[in-house]
Image (cartoon, rainbow, N blue to C red; front, side, top):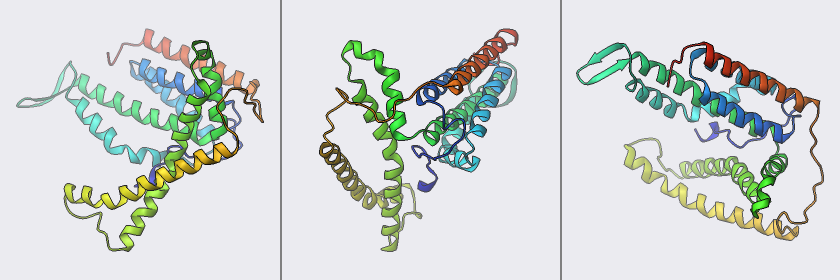
Length: 271
């Protein structure tokens, strides 16, 4: 299960999505998230889902990696969908004592499931196709207007990027520690819930120690390179908007228009 978590991993490539400016990809991600929750009927939801799948195909990354990112939260998606079955109004489809499933509940369950799955997949596109340095620069430039309020934008962007990129490192470390404990005879897969939680203690303690050690090494490496924040700092590569970014923003505007038109001309399925 630990190996299936792909969040934070970067997959080098030369696809059109890889070559987009990091700011454009961040705007695309934010916009698609807004569109997902703005869709209130099946037509608009279908449109934004197809648009998200198109982005996934353009990355030229194996779809199995996206399925792995879904596998980790599959239980959460299924549980959320089941819970939403019992919330809603409309025609009663099935009833037993105090349990009632309505047409609105089925619609809510379908919408919630598709929304969560699309969110995870689209978020994976950003980390799969954007290097840590590009992601930091993109976040910093998008948040640059906050400098007017004396907010340390560069430091915030750096912390967010480091936290995101530490996820695969810590997962790899967790996998190594678990394998080492299993080689010593530790049983982590049998027994009840309490027993399994107790079996994780020998994993968590060395993981915390390793995490602090890695954080200390990173801080020392940054100090040795005279890193002192964003003030007066220059960049080796300066990102620029290109015709690809313009086409991506035009495509985004078309999708936005389609979602709005679908919401206007088709009856709302969920409210």
